[in-house]
Image (cartoon, rainbow, N blue to C red; front, side, top):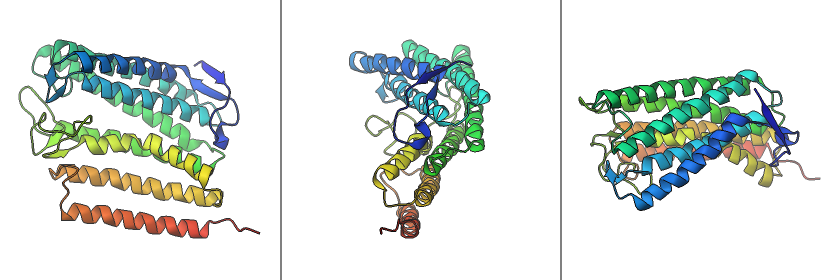
Length: 311
């Protein structure tokens, strides 16, 4: 596996030494960014509508998601103190299956039909089967990278916890996506995003998340982006939490990561009960406020115990 030596970037201590950037993941980032621009053009100039949204919206969202995902994993591998060959090769595998996934989505857009859960013809069923297989392969490649991060000791404790929890919560988000295959179901479709309403109904701007029923994409989306949210929290604590000890910053990451994981489960629970994100019932609100209160109390305790003494 070939890596690129580049000057360190960022201010986390783990990046002070020369970083090794995974070529395949950086290539995925660039290719997905180019596809996002092409899909954005499609949204502007192709007036076709599919499942209630512009037909090029799905490839745009997936391209942006893979660009961010590829760069984040490349950064995480660069942060590891020692090179992990299995993790580096897992990056190559992720690049390969992401290309398959994106290619099928674009092919189906060009054909004017859906990609996910579509088994309406032998060709559509074959393409969906290929997508399902690629998703499973990506899941296990991600597991390999997570194991590599768990086994190594990153000097900055907050960054270490952020990377590890981010990778694990992202796995949770990926796993929750399999709930979509059990929703709905007809001879032509073997799953659905929405709960309680058909796919393609009224949705939120850009995301398309249902505004009339539950939507399993929400928990899936939030879970995946723990990869970015927790390292950004670690960066913010290092930048602006100068009066906190290293142990306190790490403790806040654990509190934030735990709350984030519970939030993902709460969002999925809300969706499974056929509730739109912005129309929660009293029970859902109570659960969310309970999580907020527990998180705030835990964070306050960590900060109180972890403030540096000023002489």
